[in-house]
Amino acid sequence: KNVYGAGVVIIDGDKVIHEISKSGTDKELASMRNVAGELLGAQLAMQWLLENNHSEAKLHFDYKGIEEWALGGWKANKIGTQNYKAFYQSISNKLAIEFVKVKAHSGNKYNDIADELAGRAAFGKPAPKATNKALDLDEPKTRTENTTLVSLKELIDFLTTSPSTIDKGIT
Image (cartoon, rainbow, N blue to C red):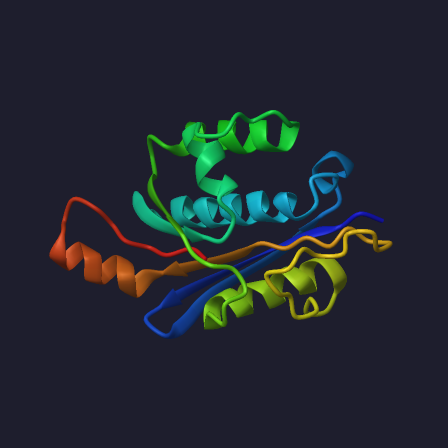
């Protein structure tokens, strides 16, 4: 059974105010392995921002495709990436996103929490500790995860210094 998971951690300062953990089993998306979870996590974060009346955000992510497919830097060849790009284009007039790449599996507290959420979503328990090495994807399940962090404190801090942009983090 192919399963992918996504985890989103929403914080205000150092306080976690919301978490999202969701899995998917779509065979076409699961064939994209970890990319499926990355795309799902980014979409979940953006949906949460919109549902909570945010119009601008800084999105921290650990997979470069999150930015590249959204902004057209990479060609979206597969259905999953095409749908992600279409989703982003459909909300980009309501939610201005500044994309920020962060290093994956580098000991970031909230990135680690999001990894655990993704693991729980995909496997019913936290994912095994990952490293920057390639994952063994020849397991019975396709192991995928996404890590997302939304920092409301950064949003508030940034708004007080620059009213033209809201700052949120997603990792």
